[in-house]
Length: 189
Image (cartoon, rainbow, N blue to C red; front, side):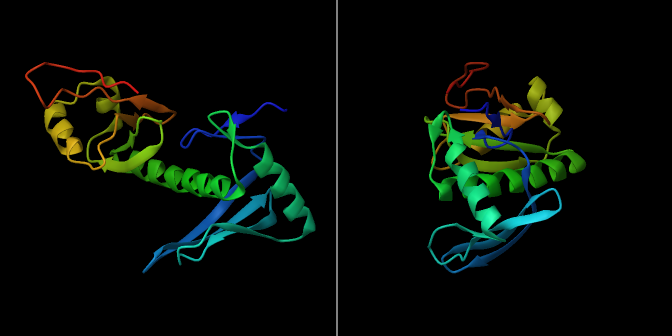
């Protein structure tokens, strides 16, 4: 197998980064979120990843036969934590990577923080934008860390660990223990 590249925001392991999502349109429906995203290689359209938001799965409509074959090879080679994924899971991770990248850029522009809560298996349960510069959270010197910890403790299901996006990678967020008088507790995955 070829060397895989790990996408920074989702952790999806991909065989190459030549495929990229160039646009994403979303619409809330009664059963979920419908979306359509163009996948390109350079300027050439490979196809469209879409979900109709009716409770069904996410699929790929190729622009041509080459797009169908290329995407099939791409999805077969993708991994999540070293394990193979189904095509639909790959598509969903690609959409999440694109959407999170947009959110991370917006957060950096607004000087806010992008936080994620992970379950015991390391899967994302929550994505939150906190109105505090990420550098303060990454350094751990935000003066209202206790208040933030109390706010985050209300998220359900309760994450095992919280992380902050520092602009390059996810970093563990060290929060004070809100259940006792202990000064600082490191929540680990």
